[in-house]
Image 1 (cartoon, helix red, strand yellow):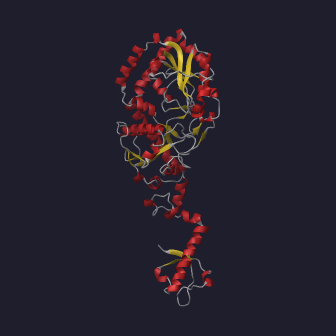
Image 2 (cartoon, helix red, strand yellow):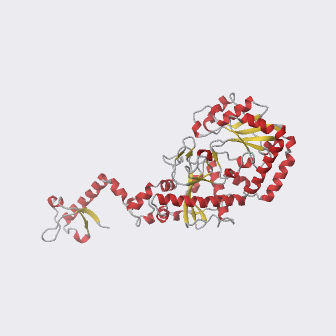
Length: 471
């Protein structure tokens, strides 16, 4: 590589001069070995002067140095020699690329580095869909080691995606690009705050939920995946197996023998906007208070103190209703109705409730899963709010409305039979993949980034085919 120093004008004999006076007259010039002075003392002076020049440039113009591709460590090694500095600058500024590459950086021993994991409950894992195979990041095990929840959710997500890519629906959602990167938001938050109608991430991504349509559409570009808990529970189900399970539910818990109450059990989770609020001011806290005031209608209680209230459980036991022990999910069918309400974000058990033979009373949600738009109020579930929950429960439990409630349960079960199977969730996932690719391609185009440059920048060769991790 040539060494760049200040141009020294040629003397009459054609040899470069070395005086300070002549050095001030020139610009930058590329010196080749043949142009270097041969005198030993002069050579030493030249080397020292060159070294000092480089130090001065680095000290006074660091941004110029860092802008050169060869010095840009965010550019994959194999690509630094071919990518232009202008393209590299555009790629570095892109939000998706910045977050994708940040997630590939090593974590410190406490997994709480300054920039990673991200704050506010937003946590994502980078993946690449390449030639019809799901590829995992090289630091997947380190990411999964953050906590048990991250490990479990990511394992189910990977298993679900691998299964979908191997299913008969693979061609339905086949993407156009041979290499398609994406970020899967693995925690509860998806980056969209309905309280402020704000979107923290300009790029499309996968998450477990999306904002409810009552807040409008097309402002949060998250794509809802089939839930990890649904995949864990129903990935081995089919319509025939559901026929047997649903019939068994009615034999064990006939409508006539059910308790004439609405049940709710859950933890003290709540949206981030309630940080600092008292427990009884949160949505779930209010629901429990409703049950304490109307015990003949609602049996509601907390089973676990988490999040902001984890260290206050002894103090809060005297202010709310706490269940003595957990109630197994199946035994909740002993009640005619079960209330479902959001926690940190969406309610991950809503689909499971539609698969049992108690009517579901759904508190108006702020976040929903991909399938919610398929469901109709008073057909698959009974809608309610915290303002009218007691009136709604009274209507559901009234003896004159028993036939209507059983029809709602049957409609919900029919939806479950068709939608909560491994094959159906694989189909839905591939459709979401197709929608994501369209949105992602448009996003990159709007940011003046071609897909080929973006893919090379992310160094996909470091990723490996995701193996089976459900053993």
